[in-house]
Image (cartoon, rainbow, N blue to C red):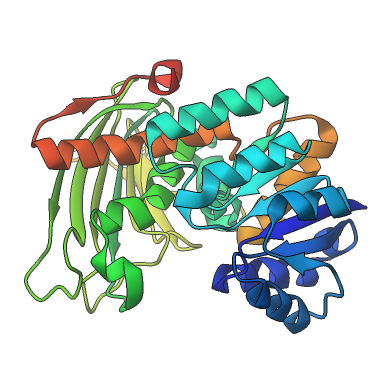
Length: 350
């Protein structure tokens, strides 16, 4: 039985604890051994609300000394993340953190170095990788129906009224949401994004203080392009939270709603070519996979099974920092009005 301490008992912790309790593969092998929050009353209330009779408190170091867990689930606000990860590593714990990995790329690099020096595993929640739809699209790409991928184009248009801190944030769309789409694009692209030009706006009628919309064009190392158009103040005709996608290749194109809606066509070389356009045939997608767990539960299960098998989870820190690099490069481009080169692979994280 793997023992975990959860730190940060705000609203997000409800989803984590529910996912763990309702996913047999997690409930049978994972024990929540303690809850920590800056407000100890919040930690105690969260434990009681989920029927957990475990120690609660405000001091993470003291909790780790007391219960000696194997892992720490880090759900704190981003400015507190580095301190939590450092404390967990110092007590011999591996860490699964909520996104974003860090408040800056420099801080993310420092956490990579820290994990390496301590010999600890650190992964970050990117729940879109653990949904049947994206696995189905990845399988279709790998099957070759589209030929070589030349472009990914993602639209994200929603109008949520969160209230609170988000409506006052700078770069709110890029910092708080776009990393999900950027990370999903990296999961599907054949090569890494290396440069970006990005424009941020705050459209008329926006209820956000600033930066509620963005348009970004990424160049990739292999010559592919990834484009992102997004807005958090777009009311009507919403996309899914997973974005709406067009994927183009040398042999065909795919439209994907971000979930299980796939339509596409590829060139039909068996049909006679006559006229302006070459003949095409509909793409029959591979079946959507049955996953042992999806979303947040899938991330948690991947983390604990990867740890047991001494392999990297899908969103290990050395991979996730590249998605974070896309965010900060897009912000730099929006602020400076110029194209930003941020390098491939190791160059992006060195």
